[in-house]
Length: 142
Image 1 (cartoon, rainbow, N blue to C red):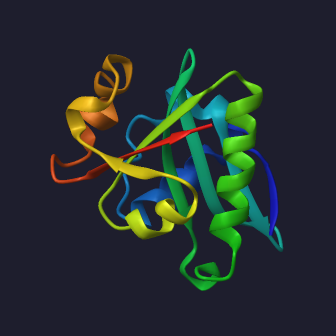
Image 2: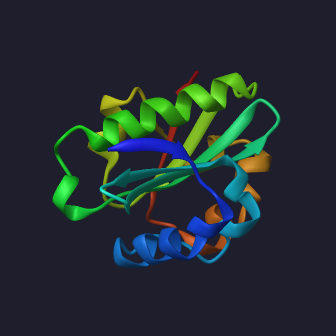
């Protein structure tokens, strides 16, 4: 899988990938400048992005096509994404997940109480509206 920055022409394919994975996709266009995609044989097979708020970021939209899961694609994509976040000055990354806390724990994230997320992260549409209140909140110091 080749990992590269997302281009505006990728938006519809990423939204479709996220819908198939049952992840929030409705507001990603506003943050698409901080998205990466994975391509394999010309097909978009993975996505990941973040919303940047100064030294904090909300990691989101990590999706891997089912055929590539458990093969290291997610690990490579997340490593690349977190490296890009560091280059942009992010020191603390947060995320919400309903299905993959174990995966993100292996990436260095740990579960925190919802109220411990900083105000900028809690004010995001993903945190406030799109993800259910039952989603696990995780944090990683970069």
